Length: 123
Image (cartoon, rainbow, N blue to C red; front, side, top):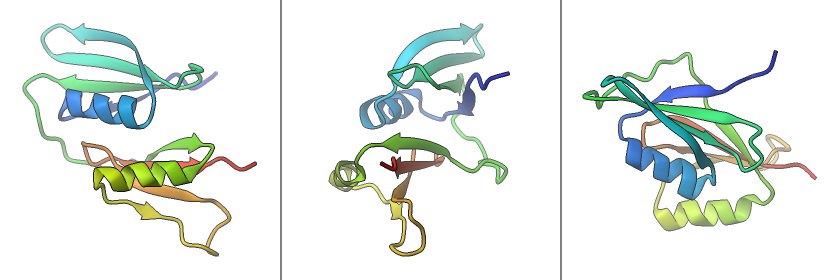
């Protein structure tokens, strides 16, 4: 058995796509609909190792974030340019505290309020 994808419900499909494609570098690989009910957009990393399904339910713009979901995590080779881009965009972020962990990471929020962790890959 292997993991297929993670599905998240989104409030604004265009803003969410821009975040995941323009900022995180994922690619839209498939799009479909469930009748008039929903639009599904599948995103993947360039190597197609992992997929995220964005589900936009037509006519619904609000969801209550549950406390059972933690975050999505992405690896980068160098965290510094990511931090610079987040700051350029004026986004709030939380970073790892020196000495508390050997990992270097930040957390940002996507347009739906989901936590996104961006980790610097260890050498």
